Length: 276
Image (cartoon, rainbow, N blue to C red; front, top):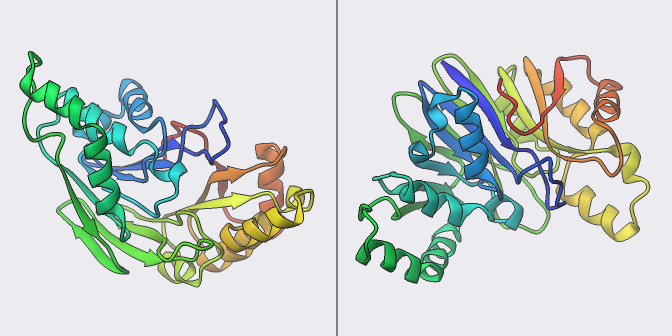
């Protein structure tokens, strides 16, 4: 059985109700994480306490990174270290764009004293759970086990040379996650009637209130409600979930209303700890 848990639906904006971007695909109580925004480990702990057995913190062992923006990776050190302190005894396996290995090396170097004191001091701890195996990815199938096949698809996100969405195919669901992206034909092609499309979005109405420089940035980096409505009408997911929402003063209902102007499928605006 597959569950989708939204661990974080936020953006760089410091909204106390929304942790940084992070999604868990939980298959047969095995978690697969997409992105690691700030708050990821505590959100996983909250989901576990709410009944999602697979999100016990020491079970967090596989991570897929869409791109290296700070709001999608600021929880990386927490994900490396905290599950280890709480009992994870296997290396963290991480799949992401070029640069993920260098980022990992710098994080481990930054926490060298913490790691040394835990290993050499009085704390009873294993010598494997803080380690990380990184894997640079390209478009195509990047991971496969008995629960899931994960495929990376290239998307366009501003000036980043590499940004990815992911397709998770499990025994009972096909799930497409956009990551941060402008409208991408690859998402339409890969969804093609998928069970769930999880897609970032910004309010097209309130976009008009932004300054010219921010309009240029957002239009070249993200997807508006009107654009997403057109994309989803062609992709035809059974369920469209909005995340990484840029509201700029809009409510969830107003955001959904903008989507529904051009899309008549089932759509929800995701919140942290929603389970689907």
